[in-house]
Length: 156
Length: 101
Image (cartoon, rainbow over all chains, first blue to last red; front, side, top):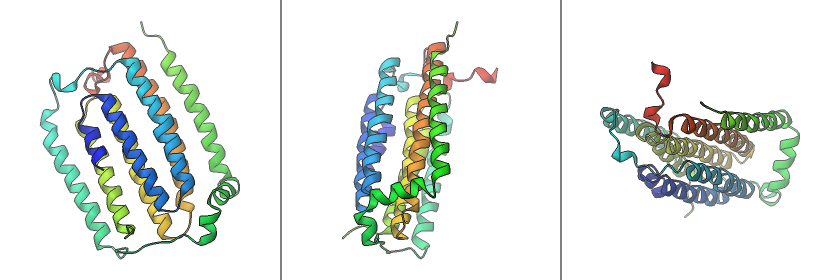
């Protein structure tokens, strides 16, 4: 959590990206605590690996080292309302959680799920979730082609 | 003592709010994008916590699909930022105002 607060306050985007990796790592540790080792590995591989490499690559490609604090801020008047809205949102969420009957409860996965987690996820993926799985694969293909087309286009 | 369900949900809410604040106050498009990723991760954490509490892994399947969608979204979004940088030589969202005039 501390690393995510730092992330949105750094002016250098490279520092932000590295702090976001720390946040993702901490989330992966929480996933292990929640009995989901496969998702923890995926979190590290997909987020901390693939997505952050993409981010760092684009940061380097664009050499976006310009600091935004040096520029005039046309939206400076919006800053305090933003803080207020976010504080109100957080207070509402915390209020809902702490007044709901879930207070103090702990879950525990059945032992067979803990033992054969990866196997069961794979089984679900190819039976009940077969259609969403195929849709996601097509969507990834479309996104890949779209990204190449958008990034390759020439501007004059 | 291991954390209970409300702790996870509150942490998810805090992370989501931080992501929202980042989207609202930052002007570097790359950092706005990272904040969006942070919000997706906060929702993932809530999914995982509730799935753990309900002793099922349907929520984890949802997290799996959210990760796939996030990967696709990042690819397209970063391509848009690269294209925008090529035409305008900047990555600040304030300069992304061509449609307004």
